[in-house]
Length: 120
Length: 431
Image (cartoon, rainbow over all chains, first blue to last red; front, side, top):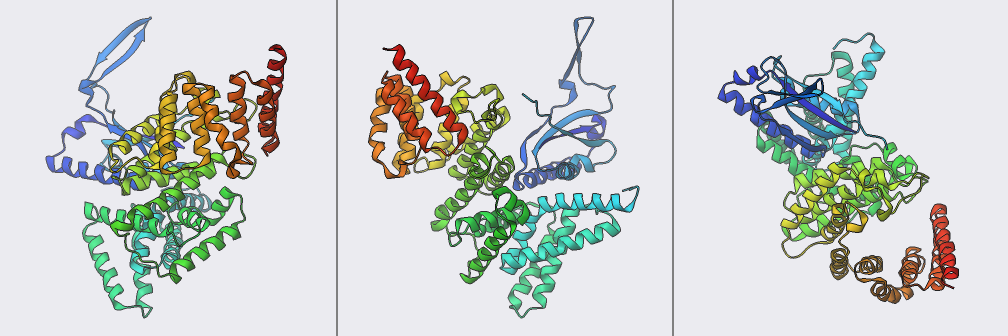
């Protein structure tokens, strides 16, 4: 079973961190990545650039509509993802809970989603 | 955690604990095995710690860091056990040092390196050449894959008691031969690593080729093998053959969905709908292949050559885009380092595609007398295909009928006979 851990956060929360806190968070992610790799469950993952470099695209009345970042009106921004291959949902939940983003307080969270296999 | 009633909570704890076991058991057993110098003892104490965890978590709720909780409980048990035996105080002090170190260095990299070394040591021991192949496979899946004896038995379609016996015998052999818990010496590393790679690929192939039973594949075993391969690639990141094996398995696994036709029968590589291939696994496999190629020191190993062949197929978006001449030369290189008549037969297929059926046939014909292939249906099948391409339909028909007589698979036999009928029609059409 494949799962994606979506890392969500309030971008202001990240900006309020001290350099020491940033460093500690970086180290925690390194450890997390090593744990995932030792367990042989990591398929991929990356942090994403800030939403100030992003763009949201939709269409209205058949017309393309672009909204440049930062998306200051949204409190929650996707900041990265981790892709896992595990045997059970419980295992995925446990890995998701170990993600540093799930341990930072109310401004940060992870969302666990199962990858949908498209039937032929 | 809020739970509507106790039975729900118990069930939830059991499921979470099972997930924790799957994540932590290999590390826990690896650490305890180093401290106790016995896999048997380590596994027993790890299981005791797990039972203790289940009881405690049911009563007090699941702790914030269940993995750490389990590791601490296991270490305590190891310490107690050592205290209660007359086994040297030397080990006792070592475990105390370990504990202090682990407490002091909960989250720093040194402790992580130690865990990595422990896991690698456990892998080398579980795959030790003194053990039978069956023993190595069972021990590896149980100690490193976190599978129960029941699960292993189900995967290999053998009774649980058989697996339990294999594990017991393997553990006894390790104890009797006083197998050391040190990492192999550099001089032995190559051979010891080969044994680990062989076990992992064996597990994969048992899943991918499903030698027993009615299924074409048993995907759970493929997943277990991939997981072990990924762990090994993290533990031994600089060995070409380690990344090569992982690449080979990922590229093969990428075709899993495309291997079954609408009638439930297996589709050959060239018949598969390539849009069904798992692109994530293809991409990872090709990345791993590049990494493995960059790490070659004295020459490509057998897994690298096989991964490179798999990579040639993976890169071809359509079957007709396949770089057959490169595949033929990769098989030739493989023949050079690991000669086998099956590889030569594969070389014949590739050469036939690249340089024409006459070239392929010239490689196949000398194999006809090979005793290892005398019962192998694909030899006459390949020969039939090449003969037919040369317009020699009568000989092709005889050859493919021979293939039909040799196969034990009903679906395969039907396909061979279909081809025989086709060659008959061609014969009549050609007058």
